[in-house]
Length: 207
Ligand SMILES: CC(C)(COP(=O)(O)OP(=O)(O)OC[C@H]1O[C@@H](n2cnc3c(N)ncnc32)[C@H](O)[C@@H]1OP(=O)(O)O)[C@@H](O)C(=O)NCCC(=O)NCCS
Image (cartoon, rainbow, N blue to C red):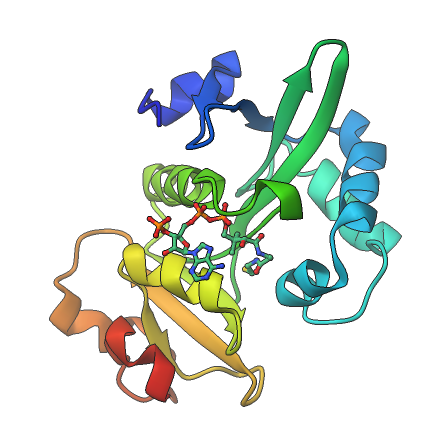
């Protein structure tokens, strides 16, 4: 996979070469992307929509769509990946981080089109989100993941997230990663006051 600097990739829409040999371009979302995002969400399988949005939705609520497409100038980042095939351009992934519920936290989320999963795109987007959040001085990244989401748990494990107390109930794991270089032994400090000590990612399966 290409390892161009993230800022260059986003600014130039430089191609990212995936494991399959196919390329995509990643760029920030703008107001003109609302229709493409909604179509992308409708095309996802029921399983992918459930894993990303935690509910059996068919499409995004207008307020959610507006938050995504009108994010320019606000803290955080919303990215989409597009595949070009001759004249045709189709959206194949959506990824974002946004300020979270407490100071210094940002919430990460991403979804890759079903036919494009397993090709390294999720990993590339995760890297972009983390790097961008680091550059924006976010102290910690949080991802909420359904317990049966093996792919996302494996991806989070690869990026050194640790499991913490989740306010979203027993079916959801809240995964946390320090972004500003505190030693991993100190990760418990980054959870909320009521949270128990964060556990190593290797313990996901047994939480
Ligand atoms: C989770 C998701 C974003 C991963 O994106 P992806 O492009 O498929 O992931 P990648 O190909 O970059 O793989 C990254 C790592 O995830 C893990 N992974 C991917 N697919 C997996 C699967 N089906 N089962 C187990 N692990 C898997 C692997 O560890 C992989 O690393 P490796 O290829 O070096 O072994 C994607 O599967 C997806 O969109 N799922 C539905 C929505 C969702 O779950 N979103 C997350 C909620 S925040």
